[in-house]
Length: 169
Length: 273
Image (cartoon, rainbow over all chains, first blue to last red; front, side, top):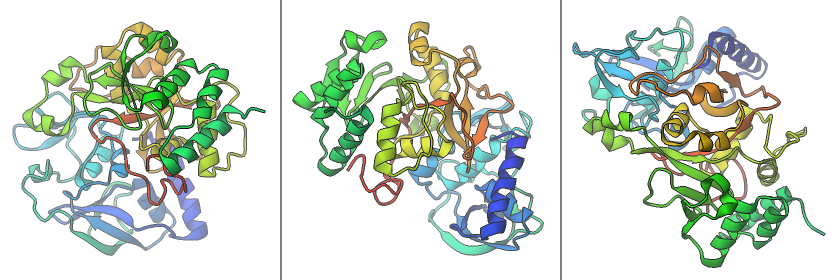
């Protein structure tokens, strides 16, 4: 993930565009986790929408197991490994535990896309927990079924953690 | 009267999009412009279609290697093999994953990951290639794209569009890490002779990574560790750096990417119909 300066500049730039033209593009892609948490894979857009005070934006919610289109998959490359600790929790980088996702891997599902983009954020120290409730059920599509549910909707932007996590619609 | 090489390349792309065949005229254009390896490999393809050949001395540092001629990578290949993409007119090398990393693979990982990282272009995109693509894609460049042989100073989203048009992506750190482990210094020096930054994979929706040779080729990393990213290593799509170059890559995990919508990136001519 880009450094914080670039992130700020980028958000400001997109915010300017949103202020001038409003929300004109496609819905925001979000990933719905089993516990109800929703995570966007388009951090900059969400943060920019919050910055300019857009109250509602259209969203498209993807199941974590839903296959990611190849054209998007090329943009989600894991730069730090994700490890599973003996207690079943997941951490970014570090040296303890078993490597679940190796660096260099391309995301194959929307859930992996959210995970991989998050782990690239430089603000997260090595060895810190994955900052959302990632579960073993979302690795490799082994236990989730009926994997391509998509729902349209709108997201309330107020109060969401900018750029990373969005709880509830 | 002879056309400039970028015009001949654009004609080649249109011909390929319409008829699925390479342009014989491009062979002469490549020869005239000193692109001897590409000229020879394209001529061999036009003579007898897709197949394995052994590269000659025109391929320089890559002389004597197996090279697949075709519009798509071969079904089976080994690390260090070459692929001459007759559409992009580019030689790529198959980069193997480092042994230490392979030894660490779990059974689950073997189901997803491959023993090679991908087909990494042996050199950055040439100026004539980018200008030819821009002509076919209808890109309004609005300024000169470098004065050297390479396409330099293009926006990140232009580089991305170029790569996607050919069903490829921009390289990640993993390709260079694999290359640094697998190939001799002579080869690495030929592939990336100076520490001129290159445009890499997308790190957020509107920003691409900037890869520097010194960091990208750093060896002796822990195969289970992180890539050697700098504090600041990305640039948004609205910026370009004067000397920055780029090259294409096909990840073996993903393969050749499908066209982006009708015609690929909104381009009316398909690169691989």
